[in-house]
Length: 420
Image 1 (cartoon, rainbow, N blue to C red):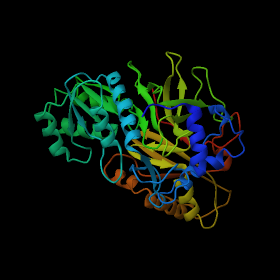
Image 2 (image 1 turned 180 degrees about the vertical axis):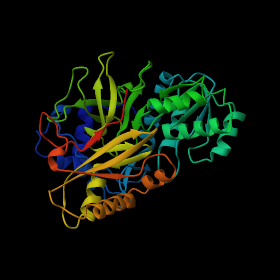
Image 3 (image 1 turned 60 degrees about the horizontal axis):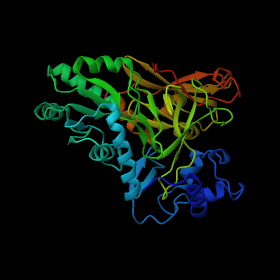
Image 4 (image 1 turned 90 degrees about the vertical axis):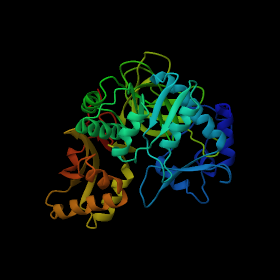
């Protein structure tokens, strides 16, 4: 399917999707520019996009592949692609793999995760198959035991490893501790989470001949976001023109940012998805234009809609719901998610504000953590695996919560991890 004109997409979604019909109800009939349209509210979008009787979809769910995206176990979120949409998705992303350093004949190990409706393994494998250069694909998967993965990589002389930073670092640590050399590896393609300096040092120890680069910037809900830009900064990407439009919006006003170096939140419009339209959808990240090329932007971290802690995705609504369930006495008057990094691992701190004189905070902290771990079981699983630090609670007064200096609005997520 070729990318369609924006005005056609808007008319189609407005006519066939009850969600977009309601969202655009107050707009003029011929509104056809992105700036004419409101930004999608994620919570409202996913409340409307139920698997049965979805108000977002533009037609019946009769030909599509269903994937699971982030959210709570109690309220799973599903993203759907028709076969034509998926073909466009992986073909465009596959074209971007050349910018990462993929070369003809490269033997590429796909170490992303498969099963349970997750898309990353199949997405990367299909993107490699649609890349414009020949390559040899090794579909190993991130869940395979390291004891078998390392011999497979060695025996098949894998030259490229593609996976999350967490998976690549686990592999590197195992290789170093077991004294195994994987001298054939020359390229490490990471995706799904940021790669930090301490991780780069570990990867360089295990794979001294390999260069770490972004595999590309995409998500199963938002679709195509950024094609890798060759260079020393793996955070820099460029829009997948003409398949998607990336905007960076001011945190307070939602006005598009055009000047380089000014951070804002990433909003994407997919021009090739019709069954589940994505129009001015928040990608959950912050970025800034670099000014170094047309459509070039630098990813700065997660925005308030969601946060990535190691391999775990969380939405602010997850934490808010956990607090609401656990705090039966209504002691909590404000909340922020604070992501930090120490001793080579990410950790999530729930910063909770209470009124002076409140008691029983230790029991409440335990209840909040237990509730959040119940709805996001991947977090305690990742703690036990040594990928992230345990959840913790920091008690403050409401005045101690960080706010946007321009609008006074509460900042929901503070990402204090180094991104340089």
